[in-house]
Length: 230
Ligand SMILES: Cc1cc2nc3c(=O)[nH]c(=O)nc-3n(C[C@H](O)[C@H](O)[C@H](O)COP(=O)(O)O)c2cc1C
Image: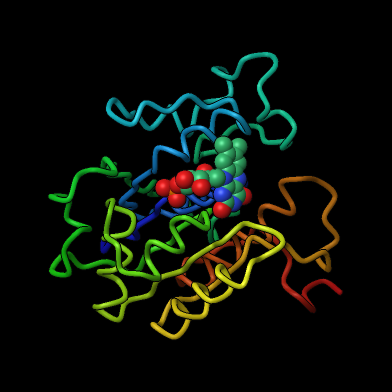
């Protein structure tokens, strides 16, 4: 299956990236994953997840419920598990029969497939996206694999979805978003709506993850759509 690239960077809202990965895998997608060093600090601070970028394992990011410590910050998200099987029936219509696959790439590995335009993908998501990464891409820096893969998606005119998380926004950040939008990226801020009547933190997270999946064309039933069951 043609893969989707997911980059997790060091903005607040690490749960958005983790929940998106869980959803994509449960929907049977192949995910090319890369994580910035700053993201590991946020993943540790916000979710209690310890990520070793040079010795990465899938379970570090999506640990089964049995492995959560009693004081895990994950508990406040009312999730049974981060294991993709916990999303059965919500990742797509009657789906989840075939679990997806994750291929991890170190942020320094410019030899990874996703660093080249000849490696085909369905698109790339940066979730969450820090202002630093936003700037790096807007100015063509390619100073790590996240920047480089994003640059490739822009030059190949493939879908690039950027999920910035910052407030308020400086004119520098706004200018960088405009540059990326004009270059073809979709700017999809981590800015949940409230019209789906959320009752938990994960309902807010799922609003954003659902909008990303819609952009990628990945079926999901994470949240009610407007005018559904009204
Ligand atoms: C706990 C924590 C939360 C952060 N939240 C944000 C944020 O919401 N937005 C942002 O742009 N940067 C945030 N930062 C700062 C970025 O991590 C920092 O600018 C870093 O250099 C970004 O690097 P990266 O884009 O390679 O991940 C945060 C840092 C930490 C430690």
